[in-house]
Image (cartoon, rainbow, N blue to C red; front, side, top):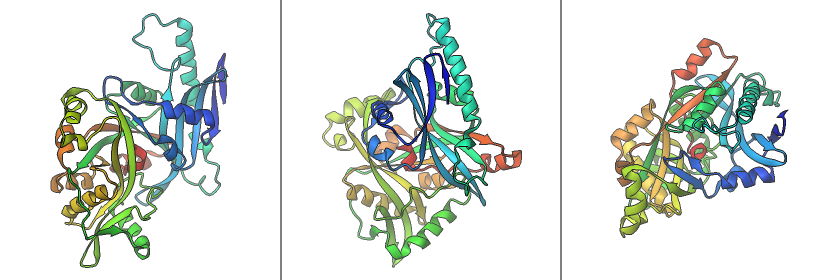
Amino acid sequence: MLQYHDLKIETIHGASEDIRKHISRVVLGTPGRMRYRHIGVLNKLDQVGKTIFLTLRKGHRLLGTVGLVQRLVETGENRSNAFFMRYFAIFSPMRSKKHDKKQRKGEKDKQFILKDQLKEQFDRMDQFIEDPGLQQFKAVSYAFIEKDNERSFDFSETMGYQTLGEVRTMPFSRFSPKYHKNVQSLPQEEKENMMSKIREMYKDHSLFFPDYLPLDDHYFVYKKDGEIIAGVQCSPVDFEILEMPGFSGWLLLKVMPRLPVLKSLFQAKKFSFVSFDGIWYKPGCEKYLMPLFGSVCARFNTKVAMSWFDSRSRIYKEIMKKVRMGFLTRIMGTLPGIIRIKFFNQTETEKREFLDKPVYISGYDMS
């Protein structure tokens, strides 16, 4: 796509072998804050959907990647092409060194020119829409950034992104989860009706997409008197926690591994949990999410599950008010993040449609 001296930026459709190797080594999170590694990242890489990688190379050496996962999203009655940014990991010399007084002028010049040229590509991201059937829709790009990750925030600012909302992470935990007799996998004949219910649930959210809602045998429902009154799609996840500051970090990393009961809830070397997508419940039936979530944990032999919501979401507020989320929520809280978005050729009215609605956040994207 472009080159400056020994540095060049390329576009690659799908993950090449060196991209896979690069991503497998990436440590996520913010220095000085929570830092972790996704143990099964390569398995998930094959399942996230159509992904375009922008790569930064010095000669033949891969220094960084930005992955753009392409999808069609729904906001109210409107549909848009969306590029979800993930696999963002850029090593020196691209990384900012604004606190390093010894940084050479030539290195600063390279960073400035590369970022300037990279922004030109981000400003024309709709060039990556190759399907003629999708070219009728306008495009957006969005990303989730940890609240204290200044480096990622500054990069998104340079690329023209703006803040759309705030992410809240909701841990659910039980020391002894049990499978409830009213919980089962979604019957095949209920699949179409269930998807209609989920779409209705999130019709007041922006950026809704069903890509990670196959409603397969990993979509579990709670039935009462033969009626489905709650449901959730589940994906097992394993993280390795490398660093977590503050009192909660000290408690999780130093204290809990030494206590017989608590250590079964959290292990830093392999923190296993289930991520949630497409949470649905019949109005007034929020309390049935507790036996549903507990049954899912028992099914996947873990004691923890995670879900993510825009803090403006009525669903988030109802769950936090009426569902007892467990021990981890009490000590960790609902960890905040930031939603950033970039618009392409939208009118102010069209932008407002996104800005005024809470964002649908997929657990698959967040894990």
